[in-house]
Length: 87
View 1 (cartoon, rainbow, N blue to C red):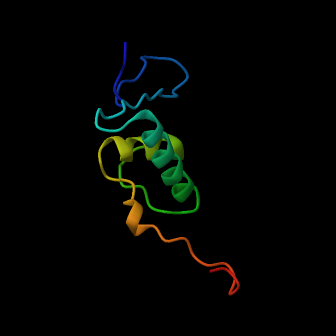
View 2: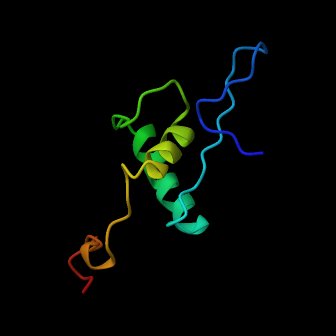
């Protein structure tokens, strides 16, 4: 049985377990990659777009599941040149 993020176990040690349900429109690979990139941003100091006391990985998954974070289109991503000799 899948539970939503807000479900909490009664009693216990106070740690809430969270399971984020992947949206149907995203395949699992895309969901994991976008969530991992967003978690990396959160770890570097970016402000979360959802409220809650969760770790960066769970916060990133929640943001992607709610549609607050999406991947960039392929044409918009241009890798930066590292050196002048790279063409």
